[in-house]
Each structure stands twice: as C-alpha cells, then as structure tokens.
Length: 203
Image 1 (cartoon, rainbow, N blue to C red):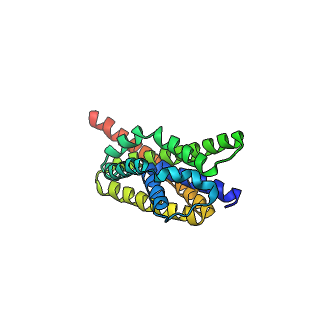
Image 2: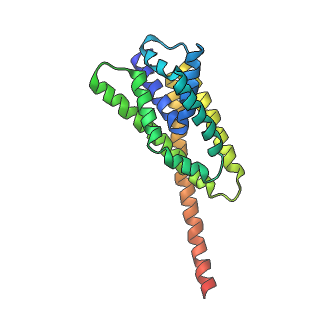
Image 3: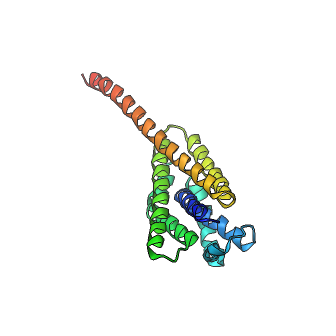
C-alpha cells in the first residue's frame, strides 16, 4: 500500500469504528487470526486484534451492541455511553494502521482517526434520536440493520480498495448529516404549525 491508500484505509476504518467499534475490531481480528486478511508488513501492529482476549471482548461487545442498537432509546443510551470510546478506538486504529515513525505524523494520524470516528458517531447518534421519535419501532430495526450491513460491506471494501471505501464512507456520513438537518427543519415546521392550534385550544 502506498501513503494515500494507508491514509484512506485509516480514515475509512475510523469512520466505521464510529458506527460499530466492536464489530470492526472483531471482524478484523478474526480475519487476521484465520488468515482471511493478509496484511502488508507495515500493518503488522494490528496483530494485537487477533489476541484471544481482544477477540473475546470485541465479540461480547458486538453481541451486546447488535441487540441494544435495535431497541428504541436503548440505542441512544448506548451511543451516549460510547461517545468517548468510539472516537478513541478510531484514533487508535488509525494510529496502528499508519504506524509512522515521525511523531508529528503519528499525532496527525491519531487526530484523523479520532475526528473521523467522532464525526461518524455524532451523525449516527443524532440520526437515531430522530428515528426514535417516530411512533413505530420498525424503522429503528431497519436503520440498525442497514448500519450493520453497511459496516461489514465497507470494511471488506476498505481492505480491498481503501480509497473507494473512504469515499463511500465519507458520502454516507455527509448524507446522514444532510438528512438530520432536513429532518430537524421538518420537525420545526410541524411544531410551529401545532403552536397556534394549542393557543386556540387554550382560548
């Protein structure tokens, strides 16, 4: 991998960690343990993810998150608890992937990973809060399942084509924020229309 591909891999992996930190860690570690993911020499630091203890913790976290993320408002509590953990995990993954000898570049990699994971986490948490406000529970399960599938698919793409994965992940995050803005404006308009009705009812 050249420098551009390494940065793209770090960025896309960190973005995915902002959605599903445990799943990204578990799949990557499992793939390395069984040789599904033949990493180049500069990524051998990620061998730590194949450690049995890391795999066990990541597996338990993946199992718990799979169900917690599909229950309305429980997913928001889960996101709040992981507001610090996901960005930190994304930052450490980025640092391990880039593995630069220059301390300044290491700091840049750490900030890149943490920022990417935080951005993805913020978009996810905000979107899920709006979804939870819907009167039916089906949308929550659909959105959560879509995130599971997107995370697994983009992780596979990140290994095969890091640049393409980084672009797709970035577009998804941008789309998430755009939908959040649109949804909030729609809710604000609905609330504004309801206010006069409430005032008339009081009279």
